[in-house]
Amino acid sequence: MTPTLKLLRELIALPSVNPSLLPAGDPRAGEQRVAEFLAATAGAAGLDVDLQEVLPGRWNFLTRLTPTGKVRQRVLLAPHLDTVPAATDDQFDPRVRGTRLYGRGACDTKGSVAAMFTALLTLAQTRTRPANTEIVFAGLVDEEIGQAGSRALAAARFPADLAIVGEPTTLRVVTAHKGNLWLKLTTKGKAAHGSRPDLGRNAILEMARIVQLLETGYAAELATRRHPSLGCATVNTGTIRGGGQANIVPAKCVITIDRRTLPGETDAAVARELKTLLRQHGLSATITSEKSGACRPLETDCELPLVRQFMQTVRQTKPVGANYFCDAAVLAAGGIPSVVFGPGDIAQAHTADEWIALASLEKARDLLVRFLGGLA
Image (cartoon, rainbow, N blue to C red; front, side, top):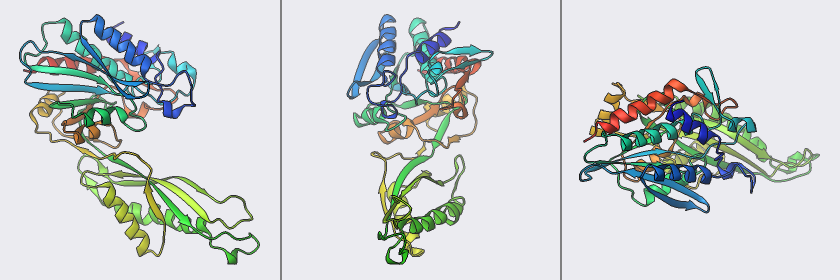
């Protein structure tokens, strides 16, 4: 068993489900077990360790490999430690079947944690550490919900010349990803007895017209806005709530929508666009944000020297985009040029039989060692 596979099995067996996705007090909640395990492993390898408290009982784990000479640049390896809940408790029992390893977090993103961390340990244990580049591993908390870990790092103005954010990208260097905007739309009506609907105003009916507009005309218009690496912007109506019982004309209806944004689009501009759209069609709803922090799109210049060198290492000639949002955009907004890279495929993330290909895991580690070991 390789060190990377061994570490991944150990990480999967340590539940680190985002606490926001579990009932209070659930023993599987929180990243603490994983952070402490990695800290102990790094300490045993002689690396400096730092735990940055982000939320009560939840810490970013940081360790660094100092260069042989003066620090002239810094590369940040930044996978996240939290996972979504398991479909069954069996997912915390890592299982190798054929050429795959199954378990919660196998690809999202404990596979990236294992590949990046063992790459760092490999460099620490050999003579291939860079002369003037410091390499920092940062295991981040809360990516699955609010990105509190990356937001804390960005707010602290952590200095780095490149961040490689660990996500399942099938070993491609992703330089752009979509933003994610959740909006709540509320329509107001007038309650009345179900036997006299003419005396009320049905909030659900108004909302039905809005949903129809969003999912047809607006979605079609968004399909015309295309990015060379990301495709088109999208909208999805995810939830709807309205009314209390059948014999009351509903006075309120609420939907939440997921709007995926492209580079150049802002949250404020999207909200204004929707207000204008509703007004043009004689519809009315209040619009508020459902996210506490901005989830901006990412677009990093492929010609930045470190980005170009990393792409050359993985033999990639063209930029690649991802439809999902991740910590990369948060770190980029904090001043760190960021790309996304890791073993596994996003198609397996969050599934009831999440898995990662063993070959992908080992290749990720090898590519990282080759890139990092080749830095000045």
